[in-house]
Image (cartoon, rainbow, N blue to C red; front, side, top):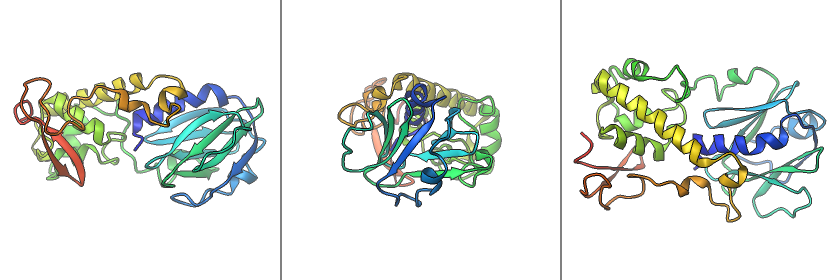
Length: 271
């Protein structure tokens, strides 16, 4: 699943091609995604200029003077810059075609993404208004994490993956941040000390920032010719390495399920 760093990489990839450009035509080949594709994509968006792009959590936003297009990549979605004349592949569901002869093409085999239109403040949209702070913002730090975790008995990994606590800490990055902070994923959230909250918040910020940096600034870095997202190129300490030696101490990494997600940690390095 594309996580926050991959979504941000995707935003940075398409932004130079579409910001300040006018949409001349849209093509919707499949309107049954997680929710029905908003009809305004074909009735309102053509003729409008994309003033800028932004991101909130895992939602991309394409802003115009008349409203905002919210894009979610779901479980398997991706965006590519293509020639509008390029024949669509299977699962290429939507094209946004621009005045300078390029198209943003939305590909989604599982159809669990979304393309929704709002004429109101997008930050007040029902899908965004409840979200917690961005992990790289000044609103997210150890003090915030400590305050929000008091009285919470859920496993710490589940707690930091809750988008109402902090957005964008997906499974890959939760595993990695907890390892670097030296904290076991099953630790009860409410039992974490302030000092350990500081350490964890710092590592979450570092892991997300590094992942964005690795993702690069071009769309090709996010989706190559084989359709594989760039985060698989990263060197990961624990995620996907259950049963293998820890890269720090050499002990065998433990793998179990937390909140129905694969969770890998080191019993020696994480306490």
